[in-house]
Length: 197
Image (tube, rainbow, N blue to C red; front, side, top):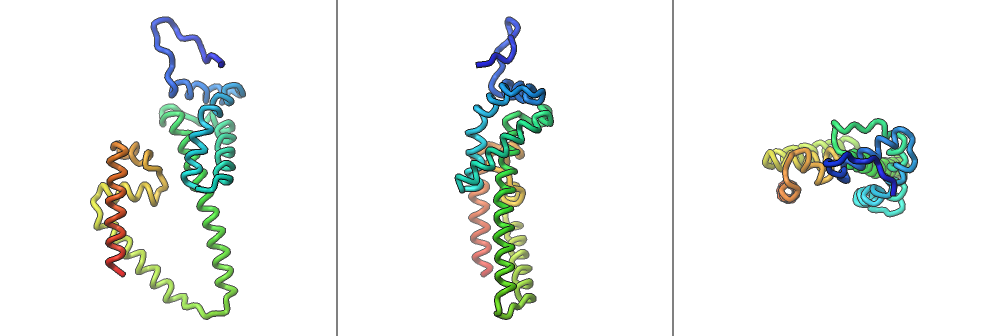
């Protein structure tokens, strides 16, 4: 194991967060041994986030590999003032995984549009747009029926793409409380949307 630096007598050893910060600093200077340690400590959590978001193991592994390469290339951009090194890495992992899901959805949507365009059946675009507008309005109305705390939690998790842990950090609220708000908010949304049909 590589020693990061000697600690002056009387000072505590750096914790895991400080150690990861130091390793990123060394990566920024091109230290491949430091990157190996970052890789060893973060490959599992990065893959875990990717798998949670993507749910396809092979694609999650690709995303995790891309994220770790990006950490190596952009380690100089990490700024301790903006958050922990682990948080920075996990945010990149989450965003990359969400991007992969969105890309796959966009491809699927494109294929579906092409299939619909090639379909000989008549298509009532006006009726479809009216239905979409009505659904959007119903979602807005139902969101307004939530408490402010539920609405804020649901918006961060489902519209902004944050994980439950990230929502808890952003709202400075315990994770269990955030999960409860989200569960209760989603139940109220489901009931409201079902009532409007």
